Length: 316
Image (cartoon, rainbow, N blue to C red):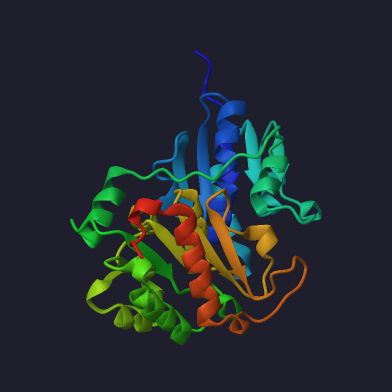
């Protein structure tokens, strides 16, 4: 029996990039049937790939001073003769390893396409593949533990982002929660905050505003369990962040709140993705503080009306 094709996939450091670039995985499985994929990525994103089909090994790659993380990776993968090395980061390591074929990211490809479209092109696919997140039993069990047996619908909110310029002010997130509580469409809904261990302060005002309708899913699980919790939500609203991309990838209708970043390059992917942007015209930029509570609430109501069946709307 022929040996399985060996593929090294050097993915991004941040969760959002890792999710978008996961569109390469179904392409790899078609192009290299039966392949064994080794995934190297940022440590916070690593749990996303533990149940991914074809991924046999996940190497968490925390950044180190002087680029020493690349030396760490080289030591772990240099002994293999790879059939393919895919390098999303465009590093030099792909050229130092023994490989029959290399596909290395180049910034020259950034011509205004969405990142998901760009990685599909990089992989030589004849169509654009979708990002994928596979939820395992452990992640689902943890999400169920956090959410509980209550079957009322949930809207998930992620008032966090990796950069301050991408973060809608915390008092406005709390104002959005107050608006949702007062809106008849969301009568009886639970309001779930999601985030990582370092996001508790950012989520605190919104959790306080949610009161007894709130669900605290901030820093209580790894990213795959957070994905499972978001998949149980009926809707998601979040800053331009990794959790926004996670939500889109698991199929939850997703509203991304964008400030001065390229929403056309990294909007939540798919037919269930929507944006509300400080500068809604492509190629223009404005600070995220331009967006008021009323604007984001209106966009949230539009998301609700687009994806929640009419029979669930309250009768006037």
